[in-house]
Image (cartoon, rainbow, N blue to C red; front, side):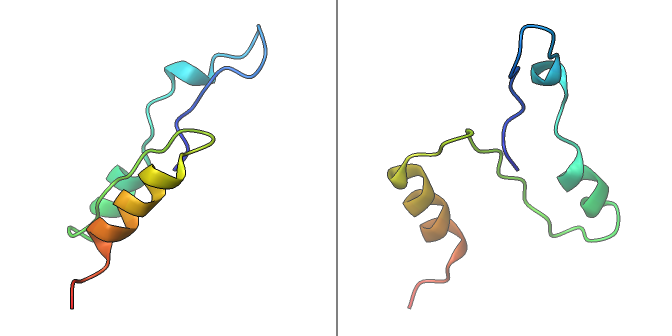
Length: 56
């Protein structure tokens, strides 16, 4: 999920802790959480894909 950030001066989203993975993990124990920047780099995306795609 995208890392919460403040989009306006009145926004307080950056203090919100991502909780989706924790909620899913309550029912599916083999759940990983990947928190990404709003605009992830292509290197970061490639690293995530490499980590989740089984090697052949």
